[in-house]
Structures are given as C-alpha cells and as structure tokens.
Amino acid sequence: MTRDASARVLDGQTWSDFCRALEEAGQVVLGEGSPRDSFDRAEGFRYLSRLTRTALETFVEFADPEAPVLFRPAHETVKIGADNPDNFYQKAAISGASRYRIWGHRGTVHYLGFGTYAGDYGSGGRRGQTGYLEASDLTVDESGAFEILVSCEDPGTGNWLPMDPDTSSLIVRQTFEDREAEEVAELQIACLDAARAPRALTPEDLDQGLSKAAAFVGGTARLFSEWAEGFAKRPNELPAFDPAVAGAAHGDPHIRYYHGYFEIDLGEALVIDLQPPPCDYWNFQLNNHWMESLDWRHYRIDLNHRTAHANSDGSVRVVVSHEDPGHPNWLETAGHRRGTMCLRWIRAAHHPDPTLRLVALGDSTICGD
Image (cartoon, rainbow, N blue to C red; front, side, top):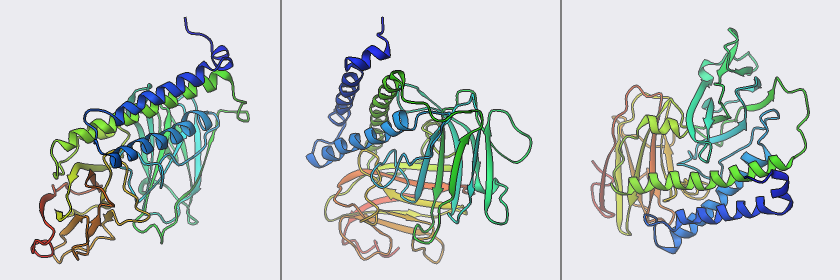
C-alpha cells in the first residue's frame, strides 16, 4: 500500500525518491547510443540539470491551474528539443475543467502563437495539441490590445482558444525576425473559475510535484536522446520529420520540421542548399547531441529568412564548419564535431527538401555554385 503524502514528506521519502529518480536519469547520458567523449557527456549532465530547473518550475512552483503563471520553460540556459533561438517561449498550467482569460498587448514580434496541450514528457503521457490560435487570426484593437477566452466550449464571439477536458498546459511561442528590433507581446493570464488566492503548499502538492518533475527529467532526456540516436544513423542528411510525431511532442501545427545529425571534422564543411518557399518564416539551426540549441548568445549558430544572405534566384546556401570559410551564411559549430540540426518552414506554400554535401573546407564550390 502506498504511504500517504504527509508521511512520505515527514520522513524524507518524497525527497529520497526524487533524488534517486534524477540519478536514474543519468543513465540516458551514459547510454549505449550516447557520445562517449567527456565534452558531450559534460553537456549531457548539464542538460539534466537544466531540465531539473524547468521541471521544478513546471510541477512545483507554477503547477496550480487555478492560479496560472506564464513562465519561460526554455530560454538562454534551458534548452529542450531543438528549441528555436528566435523564440520567446512561455508556458502556464491550465485545466480543461476551468476557463481562462489571456489578455495583453500584441507587441511587434513577427509571429505569435498560442497552443493548448494534453500531457507532458514525463509520466502523464503526451496526447498532443488540443487547440491553437495565432496572431493573424486574432481580433486586436487599434492600440494593439486583445483578450482571448480559453475554454472547452466555443463562446461564439471574440477570440477563442479551444481546450479539451484533459488539457493540462498552455504554450506560447513568440518568434522574432530580429530579436533586437522587435518587442514581445505583453501577456497575462487568469482563471475565471477560481475565487481564491493561490493556496498554501500541501504535502500532497510537494509529493506529486517532485514525482512529476523527476519523471519529466527522465522522460524528456530519453525522448530526445532516442530522436538524436535515430538521426545519427543518417549523418549529414536533413530529412523531413513526421508531422504526427512532431505534434505529439507539442510542436507548432503550422511548422514543417526537418531534423538531422551533423558530423564534421576539422578541415571539413557541410554545405546545405535551400530553395525557401513562400512562407511566413523559416530558420535553420545547429544543436548539440542532446538537441539543445547551441549558444546563440555568443556564436552564430542559426539563420532565418531575414538574416540569411539569398542568391539572386532566392536560393540560400548555408555552410557549417569549425572555421570561417568566408561565406556570408557561415554557421559555426561552437566546438562541436557532432550534433543535431533543424530546419523549419512556417506556413509554407510547399516544403522543398534541402540538399547537403560534406566537402573539404578549401573546396572551391563552397562559395560558388
């Protein structure tokens, strides 16, 4: 028989189980298919520490769906599942048993999308998206202000973001063309069916929260490690990714993803040729083996439709290498000889496949046709 939460908290069993589960998550980093050098493993264990930070915020600090808080689950030092360097991510705990109001100011950020989701990467399972609304479909007043009703039932008027009875989270994606020049939307959220202030922490809250947090760390690490190991079987290719799998992993439904794995030695370059279709946005980025975007604050590891240099016919050539070959679309590996990579098209008219080839860094065709 399971002991009650009060007893588990009182004698420290809750904390001991949490610590043991985190230790077990370390087996993902030590797994057979994981890199065996100290550099990649150091990043792997740091990755687990980062997942722990966001898991504690998700399942302990901001877990009450009757007192939702918009927080940043991924950012400059927490990275998950090929997180987009152009994105400002926000998340809140919600429940399909309640109704919510989101309100704020549109800002000038290029792309703004709101999604409701069921489940998570841990013990709760992932059912995927339960509703989606993007800024192009919002009614916004002349000052840029708007509000959204989040509910299972269609109110019939105004901006509506659907939920299902098992909805458990809200994810907001704000995507920049130019991070320095654009302003994010200012957003707030409140539960319309809660007539109370946030309640005090209970033993049950802590016991369940730490259990879910530990399951999230292990589940997230295993999920994206399995993806990376699968990509690594076809190095230096960038195939289309199954939209159903992306959706189940809480991806944006308007994005078509391409995922791959790079392996580049010193003196080599990976040349990627794109023919971008008419679309709202596209980007290409480099990640480490653990599918964390490389440190875009200090290295040029991604390009989008605005920052990339295009040829006269609209095509784009991206060159990935350890050293600068003198190409305007050079992306640096930031010390990584291997890792994952991702291409996104948002609302594209069609989805052209990129072409890739690994060449010597001094190859004359890098800067030519």
